[in-house]
Image (cartoon, rainbow, N blue to C red; front, side):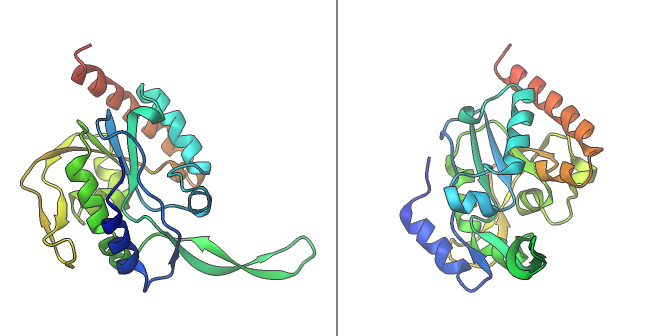
Length: 216
């Protein structure tokens, strides 16, 4: 399923003032086993247009396998569709310093800019559960007071945050309840390997949920 072209253009217009680049659509079937909400695309994703196709994506595929689902069975998206970047310097093999772009977390204004896109997907993708990957996706949907370190591995049933108006700048809550399952962003294990055991535990819980939902 893809968001309508008019919404994509609206998202590109709203985020144009910020230091971001590229645009990556969500990917997956409208009727899926779960919906995954990440943070924002990185350098690999903006080049090939495929969400979670870089280094973190490889880890995510391993986690999905542990949960008993394949990439083709899930809908993958993110809070922001363009790559937020910052300029930095890197030393080459010859010792020269060159400027390059580095990934950074999206700001609140950038998340707000692409809110209409995620709102549309939340409304139209038919998934029994929404898995948020990291704090950005979790707080975008469940509220700014949530911390993945405190609520990961829990099944949270509640309304999710959405814009009052597709072209507006203030959030409200959906009338419908959704089941949200927070877990850590797969890139987190690159900096804290001890999180791997916690993520595996989360995936085991998710697998049990999927089996129960399927009536197995």
